[in-house]
Amino acid sequence: MSKNNIPKHWELKKLGEVCFTTSGGTPNRGNCKFYQGNIPWVKSGELDRGLILDTEEKISEEAIKNSSAKVFPKGTLLIALYGATIGKLAFLGIDAATNQAVCGIYKNENIDSNYLFYFLFYKKPSLVKQGIGGAQPNISQGILKNLELPIPPIAEQQAIVAKIEELLSDLENGKEQLQTAQQQLKVYRQSLLKWAFEGKLTNKKIKDGELPKGWKRVKVSEISNVVRGGSPRPAGDPKFYDGKIPFLKVRDITKDSGTYLTTFEYTIKEAGLHKTRQIKPNTLLLSNSGATLGVPKICMIDATMNDGIAAFLELDQRSNLFLYYFWVSKTRELRNINMGAAQPNLNTDIIKNYEVPYCSFEEQQLIVDELESKLTVCDKIEETIIQSLQQAETLKQSILKKAFEGKLVNNLIEKVN
Figure 1 (cartoon, rainbow, N blue to C red):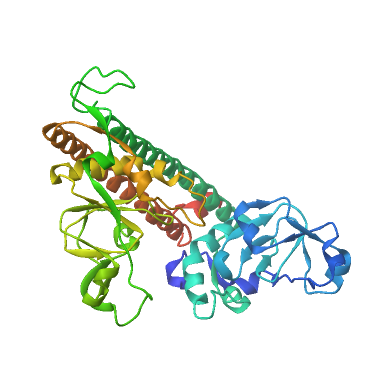
Figure 2: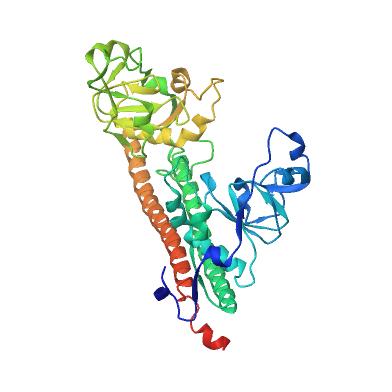
C-alpha cells in the first residue's frame, strides 16, 4: 500500500507507530498453583469466538509475576500469531491474559478498534503468506508492527466501519440463503434416490411400504456372487508389486465422486495374482472397509483388487447402474452398521443378505435415466451455488479493499467539514 492509493487527507503509518502491541506468555505448566487462580487466560484456539467473555483456563497472580503473561484490559484486540489459528481475531470483553501465541493490540483514541479489526481481517491472507516458511506459519511482532495502516479521520473510520458492516451483513444473508439451498438440494438428492427404489419415479400412486406391481425384494446373493479381493504379502514386496497389472485399493474407488473407475495408483506383478482377485471390465465394486466404506464404482478396466473392496460377479450388466445407484442410496446406512471392529468394516455376508427392490431390466433402465436426468440438473444447480459462494468471498475482499483505499464511503470529508 502506498500514499497514492489512499485519499490525500488520510495518513499512512506503520501499525507499530500508532498502536501499542505485545504478546502474552505461558506460565510454567509444572507449577499447578499457577493454574488455580481466577485471571482468565486466553489461548489462540479461543479466538474464534469474536468476543471473549470467558476462558477455558484461569491463572493466578503468582503466575503473572513469574512469567511473561500479562493482563490485557477489556476492549483489547487480539490476533493469533502462529499455528493453525494464525491471523484469527477477537476482542476481549473482559480483562484477561493470553499465551505467547496471541498478540494484544491496545485501544487507541486515534484508531477505531472495529476499523482496525476489519483492516487486519482484510490483511490476513498477506500476513499469513509472510508468515509461511518455518515449521509452522508464524506472524512475528516485527511483521505486525511494520504493517502499513491507512488512517482516515476518526469520524470517517466509524463511517467506513458502519458501511462495511452493512454490506457484509447483506453478503452473509445472501450466503446463508445459498447454503440453505445447498442443504435443500442435498435432501432432494436423497429423496430422489429413495423414491427411485420405492418405484415412485416410474409409477403413480404407490402406497408407502409397498412396491409397484411386478417388483419384488431379492437378496443381493440371488442376483450376484459377492467376493472380496486380497493383497499379496508382505505388502510392498518387490517380488509382487510395481508391475503392469492394475491393483485397486479403496482410495481408487473413493478419491472422486464419479460413477466409473478408469484410473489406478498401484500395480502388481504376475507373481502376485494368486494372492488377489481378478475382475473384468464393467464390474460393479463397493468399498467395504475404512471411513469411506459404502462407496460404489463401476470398474471399466481389467484389474485386481485388495480386500477392502467387494466385487459383484455374475451380475447381469444390465443391472450395473441400477445397483450402483441403490448402493449410493444406502451409503449412510452402511456406514452406521457397527461391526465392533477397530475400523468400520462390511463383511460379504452383510452385503449378500441386503435386500434390493428389483424390477424388470426395462424399468431399471427407465429409473436410471430418470435419476441421471434429475441428478444432472442437481449437479448444475450445485455448481452454480458453489460459484456464487466463491464469488461472495471475492466480493467480501473487494468491499474491504475499497474500504481501505477510501472508495467505499465517498465525499465524507466534505460532509464532516
